[in-house]
Image (cartoon, rainbow, N blue to C red; front, top):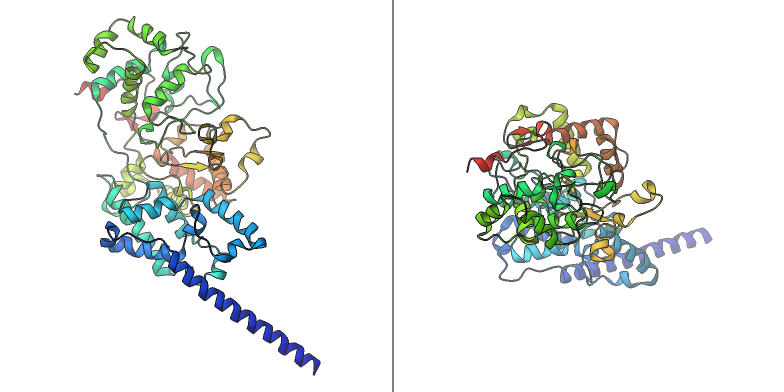
Length: 486
């Protein structure tokens, strides 16, 4: 009799719990729908059925709860014990991805960035969101196959409309990587002047260094050292990013502190560890004293004014020419199916499946976003006994705590030639770089030897040509041949 009573009591409690859970879930579903992001009546998205189906899926999931700041959260986020757990989830959610720009893009009828589309695609393909704990209280937010397909269709559609290269094959117009354009708009007279300045050692404090000292055209735009060596043999704190394809970057330097190529060109000239000049008027005087410069500046700028602005503007124009199209992978994307091998194709698929393409996307295969190093693992704890200011990433420039250890995603064009890799130059082989990225940036922490070999094989297909010359064969003083044709 007692056992029967206990059983009935337990059953009653379970039933009560189910009823309470059901009532809570019903309330939360109403709360989720009522507070979901909305489109203004004037939004162009309302006339785009592909975008509307994707937006509806995002409304149902409510990605904005954990991936935007100051969202109106469900009541249980405010409960004492749950609050501590949820705050950690919110911190991680916003650390991984900011969803506010996606909502704004839908509302304005504009495309998200290349990298934002790639991150969304990565998560949907891997079926990582929403997390199981969230679905316990929000079962309606589970993405079914149609909703997932709708989001992926929208991602491809956005790429085809806004980011596809003009010469990409039709089947690859929605692909995460696009071919580098054969040419971009350049003022060739200004670029020719910029090339002369790029190689001019009078920009340095001791007359012994130039831009090419760290950014060798014959070294894939880097110096192949762990960190840079500057004036009087001083060692800098950070690895040299490649100058090739830097025109496609969202910003310059690892922490993005320079908004464009001209601002970047100004930095090393004055840096006491790099080229070591002390002031721009003195640099301008040295340049002005060299034969021919006055006439060149007059021809380009309409006056003989030689200043920080004109010098860096010319160098930036030259650096715009340093693009490397016609890699074997570009040829593949343009429709030449046999341009890459079966292993290289397999490597590309693993590159996408594991999640590398979530950050490394677009024409430069990176360079168009900032990301935390150690997003999925303790990179700095594992690899450094003592951190330096260079390890702070964008935080050293923005002082925003969310930017700590956040760096510009390096572009992977010509990556087989640009080592050592990472901002600290800690990866000495491309194999090691691939393993580290999988370990610290993706959920696949320990990928197989075969995956590493295949991905490395794919990465080597990204080596292109400069001015029609295979990058491995470009001389240190490569002429600006396109300028001569104009």
